[in-house]
Amino acid sequence: MIPFDFDYCKAETVEEALKAYSEFAEEGKSPLYYAGGTEIVTFCRKGQVTPGAVIDIKSIPECRELGKKDGMAVFGSAVTLSDIVDSKAFPLLERACRGIADRTVRNRLTLGGNICGRLPYREAVLPFLLCDGEALVAGKDSTRWVPLKTTFDKRLKLAPGELLLQLRVPGEALELPYSLVRKTTGGKVAYPVVTAAGVKAKDGVRVALSGALGYPVLLEPTGDASAEGLLEPFAGSFIFDVLASSDYRRLLTELSVSLVLEELGV
Ligand SMILES: Cc1cc2nc3c(=O)[nH]c(=O)nc-3n(C[C@H](O)[C@H](O)[C@H](O)COP(=O)(O)OP(=O)(O)OC[C@H]3O[C@@H](n4cnc5c(N)ncnc54)[C@H](O)[C@@H]3O)c2cc1C
Image (cartoon, rainbow, N blue to C red; front, side, top):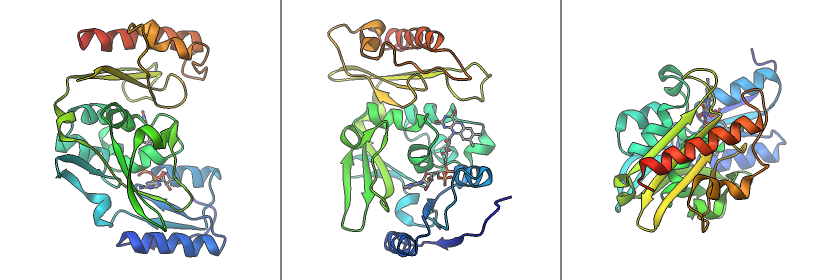
């Protein structure tokens, strides 16, 4: 049960959503955009968030797109992880989404909720970080495409009231050889101790991580292209939590990155 009342607004357009956000904010209602609602409802039940209003974005056409446009593969923020898996549109993204929860839960979880939510894994962002992904962000003054390389730093940097509409990657990224290694300590349906994903792009192999450091990150290439070399800047940064100690996580991350590199022929 959610032990407090809140307003519910179902937005049919981007403009309606932005307007509703701004009006609720002016009334001091600390509004939240609402996609699958899984995280919002869980956190409301625990009293960890207490929005006075939620704005449902699932009917906004831009948030529901999934397909190709102008040579880019486009994924709406309200598309569910099951929709992404079923579409087979982006093999690496499909693989990343398959690792998250189980089928029944994925029917509800959305791409935007995974990337904008509070849970630190945000595994669905890894393919976009690896493949020069961009985010379409709507705010009160503009709607613009922004490269994730500049707007994703541990989390997507959105100003208050900004709404993530879509993510996209260049069409050729869909064809890149890829690898993904996901390690858990609690069986298949569990949060990752580490997820290491990589692609072989024209400029070389790129690797990104989730779970290991407490946030998703694209590893910067170093002079040493081994797993140890790539992870060197993060020595001492591996998190320690109920899933694994930092030493165990570091070892598992080195192993996972080595496997990814090996699979990509490095
Ligand atoms: C059982 C379970 C297991 C999970 N396991 C994993 C896992 O292994 N790995 C992993 O990475 N994640 C995991 N998750 C996290 C999950 O992927 C996200 O919590 C989920 O995708 C949230 O989606 P939602 O649509 O329900 O978000 P909501 O609850 O609707 O929203 C979550 C947050 O994101 C904001 N938001 C949502 N959409 C937008 C948008 N378009 N623009 C701006 N803000 C937005 C909301 O305001 C809210 O603050 C798991 C979740 C569950 C329930």
